[in-house]
Image (cartoon, rainbow, N blue to C red; front, top):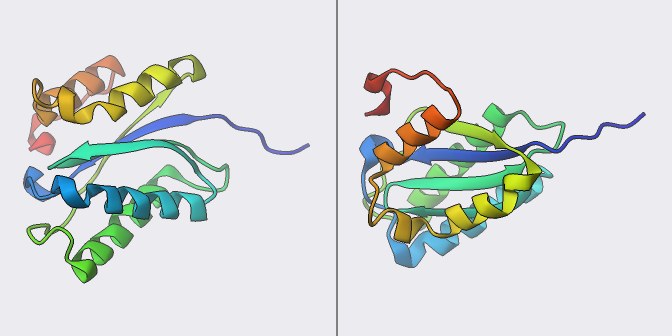
Length: 148
C-alpha cells in the first residue's frame, strides 16, 4: 500500500507586532520565493496572497512534511532572504506562531478566491477581526493576549 492524503490547509501568519511593512511592489517576489520553498518540500501551493502585515497560504502538504516544519522553514528562509535582498526595509521578523485551518475539497475554490481578494477584503476588515472570525469558525479557543 502507498500513502494517500488530501489535506487542504490555509496557513496565516503576520509580521512582528503586525508591522505594515510588506509593500505591494515587492510582495510578488516574496510569494514566488515561498512558492519555491513549498515546491522543494513537495507541497502543492494553490494560492498565496497577503497585505502589508500578514500572509495567507493555501497548500496541500506532502505526507512527509509536518505543518510546523513547513511554517518554520517558510518563516526562517524568508526572514533571511528579505533581509539579504532588502526588499522590505522596515521588516524585522515574522510574529511568533501561526494559524492553520483545514478545508474540504469542496471549499477549495471559494477559499482560493477569498485569499486572492485579500487587498479588497482588508479595506473593510482589519486582520485581527479576520483572524478571530477564522478561529471562531473552526471552533478554536484562543487567548486574546496572544493575538496582539
